[in-house]
Image (cartoon, rainbow, N blue to C red; front, top):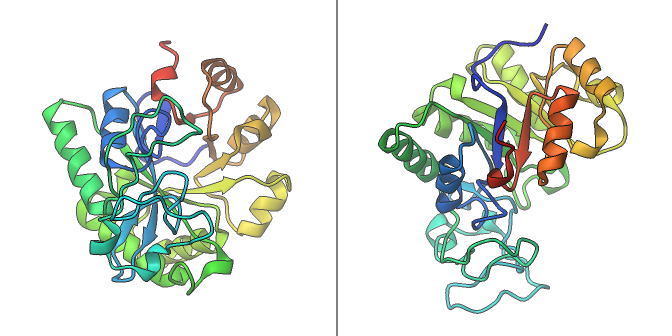
Length: 282
């Protein structure tokens, strides 16, 4: 039997970084566009600034492929501007939308900045109310790498506590999912939940390796609510195995309608996509 927690009444369609295929990733316009296109979960990433603000960003630095410095100059590819080394007021001055992203030619080019998590939630909730959209979830990925503790990010406990305090000020726990590739993060959240320090929120294990389900769960040390692998690692037997162990299965990042239909037929519980406009109509 699967773990029970608040979830969309229908299939769980998640807009990856908002809708990266159509709008600058992890920006407020991308999240609002994803909601307009009918997703029932916003998938986003968070990092931490020098002044310990929770910033919505996939990378812990300004990606040179699509970021412009405050003076409008392209950032050299050999230069890494780390967000954890900048106060948020400075981070906000960089433009991460005007240049577009060459990997996503349909992405609209518009001036945009890396928002605070608080700003994203406030904007999305205002949009929901204005447009009478049903309640949706926020799937928040903590972008953590154990080789980067105290370098481009805080250590596990501080990172987690900052995110937890910020998000629980703004949303009930049953509208939040926390995911990460860093199993240390997920173990910490699970421990805090078990101790009653954190409210219960669903935890999702992101997986890109070829170790297999058993070895990944062994490494994690507990059964998460959601197993979220790269979609090509799945087949019908694996989906069934994960369901039998009580997990939902939500693969990433699925960008063709035909693959979405194929995965739905396998029995997955949701799909993360850069292109919410490609979601099949039925």
